[in-house]
Image 1 (tube, rainbow, N blue to C red):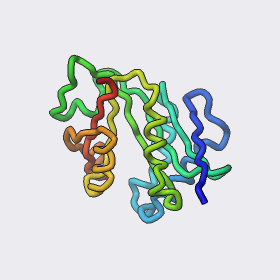
Image 2 (cartoon, helix red, strand yellow):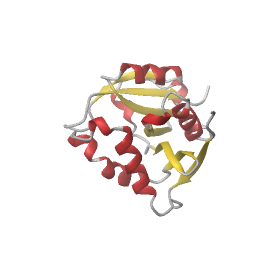
Image 3 (cartoon, rainbow, N blue to C red):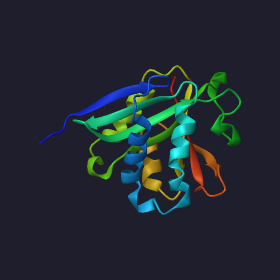
Image 4 (cartoon, rainbow, N blue to C red):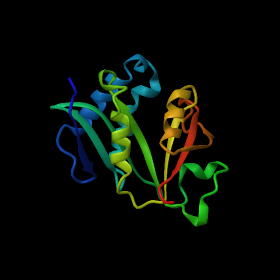
Length: 175
C-alpha cells in the first residue's frame, strides 16, 4: 500500500500548541540509538533557539495524523554564515544564506523519499542565494545524499566542544 505523506508549512509567529514537543518526540524516535549522548540530549535547546530565530521556517511530514519527519532552518545574519570559516567562495557576491538546521525522518518512514520532499519544500520559495547545512563527518552516506541534492563540501567545523565534527555543505539556490 502506498502512503500519502502530507507536508505542512510553519513559520515563526504561527507555531501551534504542542509544536515544540512534537519536534522533540520525532527527534527522540529518529535518534533513539544516540539519546545517551549528551549532545543529542540538548536537542530541546536547539528547538528553542531555532524556532525563536527571525525567519524560522519548518516543514513537517505527516502520515495521517502521525508526524513522520521534519526539516527546519532560518536565514543567517550577514557576516555570520557557517561557510565563512571555509574556503568556499560564493559566485558574484551571492552571500545571503538560509541555514538548514535539521532534516530528519523517523525510522519507519525512511528510504521512501520523505527527506527529499521535506528538504525541497523547505527551500523551494527561499529568496537567499545559498543554503548551508552541517553533516556529521562520520556519516558519509548522508553527506553523499546531500551532494545528490546539489550541496558541495566546503570544509569542516566543530561548532560545540561536545559536538561531532561536521562537514560544512553549501548549495547554490540561484544559477
